[in-house]
Length: 309
Image (cartoon, rainbow, N blue to C red; front, side):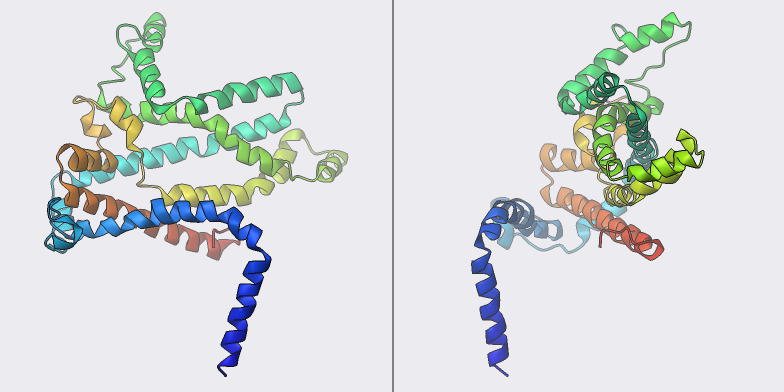
């Protein structure tokens, strides 16, 4: 009885030694996540402590769920949650289908030069840094020098205050993000469309199907698995609105709609030095994202086979 586990362990070690090149190849990625992703999780304990830097992690007193209760009972909790959810859902509703539409359109282009030019023009904004992108947005929408502002006024309309009006912040944030990332997002869908069997299109043409019908009944079903996986991943980061661009575009006038959980964590942790409280808020954000990811994956798994696990 004791020899069987020993034999299985020896077979496992022999298999590892036999394929040592594969383990060496994956070692950098393994240690990267171990050191930079799982290692820092040791600090999560300060969310349940009154962390004092001079006492360190171990000697700081425990306070349990006090920081979480403080956040849940605060007057700004629902405002932060609503701003984060509304921006994420707005971005998902606008930003998720546009790469699909672009990929289907690029796939139908037959002029090689025009196709490459269009792809390059849509991909290019992806390589612009967040800081430069925020500077461009401020420059384009400035009331005094903004080209978009002057164009709206040239058409005979009163230009809204995009940078200071809270009603326009979410639209400005979402559409600038779509402009920057939509072209890059088409790459995955174009790769999926390359797997379409040309014979299906030939058979559909013989049967008299139009180009639009072939897109609907051949191309879209091919990329549905890819769409499902990306939708699950996007839902898993529903509360994970990045703070970089929001922080760069944020000011005291649009704070009503621009303040999200990530910017609140930044202010609480780095500016106000409330390390335990900001860690608790960030942990709450991560746990909710994980729960949403698991729930959405299970729902998709029960409806079809295109799930993450």
